[in-house]
Amino acid sequence: MANLKGLAKDTAIYGLSSIVGRFLNYLLVPLYTATLSAAGGGYGVITNVYAYTALLLVILTYGMETTFFRFANKEGEDPRRVYSTALVSVGTTSLLFAVLVITFIRPVSAFMGYADHPSYVWVMAVTVALDAFQCIPFAYLRYKKRPVKFAALKLANILMSIALNLVFFLALPAWYEGAGGQGFVSRIYSPEVGVGYAFYINLFCSGALMFLLVKELTGFKYVFDRALLRRMLSYGWPILVLGIAGILNQTADKILFPYIYRGADAHAQLGIYGAASKIAMIMAMITQAFRYAYEPFVFGKAKDKDNRETYAAAMKYFVIFTLLAFLAVVGYMDILKHLIGRDYWEGLKVVPIVMAAEIMMGVYFNLSFWYKLIDKTIWGAWFSGAGCLVLVAVNVVFVPRYGYMACAWAGFAGYATAMLLSYAAGQKHYPINYPVRGIMLYVAVAFALFAGMTFANRLLPVWAALAVNTLLILLFAALIVKRDFPLKNMPVIGKYFK
Image 1 (cartoon, rainbow, N blue to C red):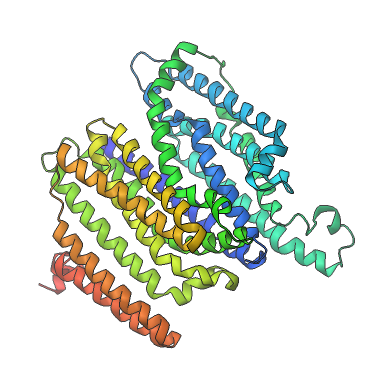
Image 2: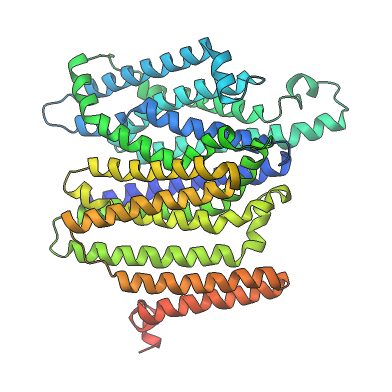
């Protein structure tokens, strides 16, 4: 019982820090979209470069975080030797990557479309190299059960980034204009750098974080065990494949868009899509919160006789509450749209599609436990890979004609493919009696209410649309209470309904 309480506590700290961190980072979207015009394409550059960064981070860590946990807890292995070997390995490959990019910066930046701004590329390369290396000491903090320090460092890094972004995108520009571009401010700020400040700030924060991790990087003898590394790489390569497929499902459209979009305003259009999609990330935060709570729960229930019934019920409740969140975002879109600049509002039509894709990603995550519980994680690589191929194909075929709307539908199609394949295979190898009829009833009702909200948003004044949408959300909530959460069974308030 004590172990379970400790697990719940650590999970809450890790989960809260991650969710709060994502929310704080989310606050940069209003800042960027308010200060970078859509026509200028600045936010499109940020969207594109950070998509590369996410993919490269997965490649440069090559599954070593999970591999470290496996070998550090393996009988007969020296945890310090495992940690040191992982540090040296990831540090060496990250350094080599940064050196190669800087050495060949001109052709690399030209290939990425930033021949006029090679600094975007080399700054990104150095930053992602630092981030990849730091993944290992952060994993070590988790291994040593130091969730508070883990969370504190993560949040400190994010808060530092937000503070510097406010300085360089709000305070200094206002000071510069007030001083007419003269005086001390002209020495530390130049409007010509523009979006580049976002990348410089990220590099500064990653560099500062190295100093905060000094205790995890010193105080022991560095050892590099080649034989151990070979065994670790053998274990980690399927995780790398799965990670690449998974991250491509999230970033491939943003990487490919500038190459396959036919218009001259590729970065402007990508910025509109990227900014509007951030509103849909509310769903991603809900999914992540569920994941942090659900993952240890599932493995903890693996030996119980009723585990499959529990997994089935958990799936239903996940779908119910994500559909409720979906309707809430759509219903209050006239309020939430102010989170991004007015220049980007034309992209709001992608929000329901992206949110639906996020729900299917969450369902796919829930379904993924069948192959994790039977130690057949290679299935995950196949499912994610298939979804990624569908996503890329839809982007390549339809983006030249339909622009960023094709990106949204590509994500929908990719996650739908992975979800359906995982369900079909899971029912064969680890059958779970999911309440499909009940789930589909909620989906059908949510779709009908979504249609009603769409018409209300288009035809009615804002105040009237918000009133109608609130009523529709309450109707969905009433359905939930009637079918699955009767008030008489609820704690505290239940006594008033008996």
